[in-house]
Image (tube, rainbow, N blue to C red; front, side, top):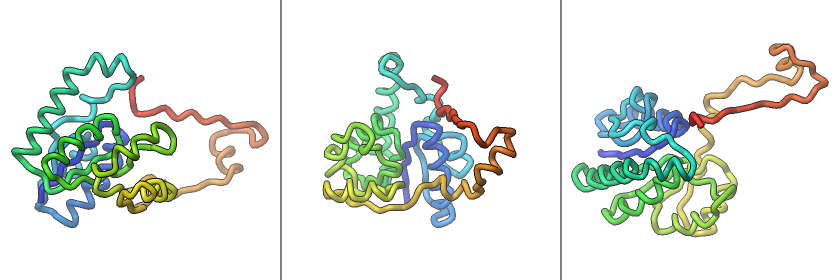
Length: 197
């Protein structure tokens, strides 16, 4: 079994590593390759490109890296023919992944999308683009099921991977005591993303 996975960001690497671990348990001899990071590699995936090579954001930065993006696309498209995967698993990274899915569809490859584009938050037109392109969406939010079903896209709610990792909960008084905060004051949390920007 050949499985190509494309996760273009650190968060995709985190979530993809769980997928690769599970695939390795179920199919130890599978050939798993594509774009990922250290966590996916440690779980047993062969990296064609590392996510850090593609971790840029914003219009100008994308324009600056267009030659690299096109080179990566050409390499992956060649792999679709030479090392034809049985299935392509796309993880998040919709700008790149939806374009690449078009090339995979032309090769007749089955395409799954895990942690699909957040069409409910921005760019709802992507749902129509996905119809006929993506064979199955593995949704991490239960409300996404209705969005994709309405468009006739095969979808299954699989749950959010962070819920398997984050099991410890604290009450507000426990949290404030732990971090030396006043319970009566407003608490503002800042959560930086995975990109340097």
